[in-house]
Length: 330
Ligand SMILES: Nc1nc2c(ncn2[C@@H]2O[C@H](COP(=O)(O)OP(=O)(O)OP(=O)(O)O)[C@@H](O)[C@H]2O)c(=O)[nH]1
Ligand SMILES: [Mg+2]
Image (tube, rainbow, N blue to C red; front, side):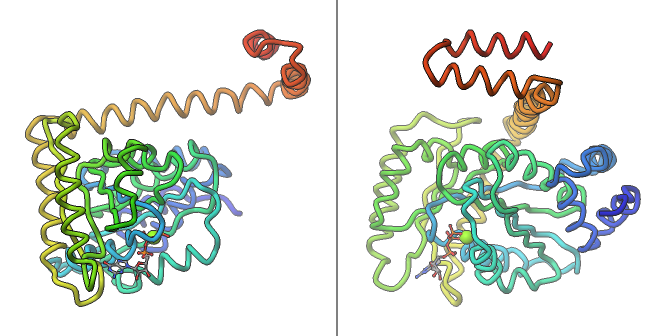
């Protein structure tokens, strides 16, 4: 890779040049040109803070991508200007995403992917949770600086990905399908506590009744949870993301997301939420990078490996070994 022209990249992003936005995201996602990535983020900073960030989570196959395609097109129906106003980022910390799934994202969002007013970015494959969170956070900043109004972040509802997505967005939308038992699973796994908007999707064909029942049950279940930030109570609604389905579910979803923004903003919570997300991210990055730097010091990796082996054999307590590693790295 040749040298990065950060100033040109900045101009391209601010002018909403698609290739520049894509390159800027690749730059901030990679660890190869960190100094350039940091410089770009520094330059873009004054232009950030305007975009709405919406997270979409739910089990694989719940219909998140299809719903985003429908919701994105529904939103764009009102956008007259020929600028990029909607973006979709996929976040996948599971590291199992195959090329097929990435293609899947694009085909599930075929109209949105082709629309000049939208920017669809499939997830970088794999990576550790912390790395995914950092690179997605920076990708969001690039899109925000580019003047995108709404940034949707789709994540597969596995592992800790909901927590990651909740740390990146203003509003979490949880997509469930009727009769799949994932409502109960989600409540058990704590997703329900993170979701400001709950969508029972695939409310069409012979699933309408089941979807309506799931909506009623979830609404009742959510009453047992304490109110969220700014006193918000989760909205539960039904949608169908099928092409040609009634748009009323999409309008209701859009309205619920907007109502949550108004609720947060009125209480001054939006600023506070974003600020605490940034502060938490700052220290997470420091912790992760601190160890990465320590292990580069002469001998630390070897000592660490030797101590690890002794811990594995039961010869040393974890705390004792950790303290020896840290002493060596000083
Ligand atoms: N009947 C019906 N099918 C839907 C609806 N939304 C999505 N589907 C179908 O459900 C399947 C999965 O949809 P996706 O949008 O790929 O689901 P996803 O949640 O993004 O899945 P992952 O990205 O793999 O986690 C596809 O075959 C869709 O056509 C809906 O509202 N109604
Ligand atoms: Mg998807």
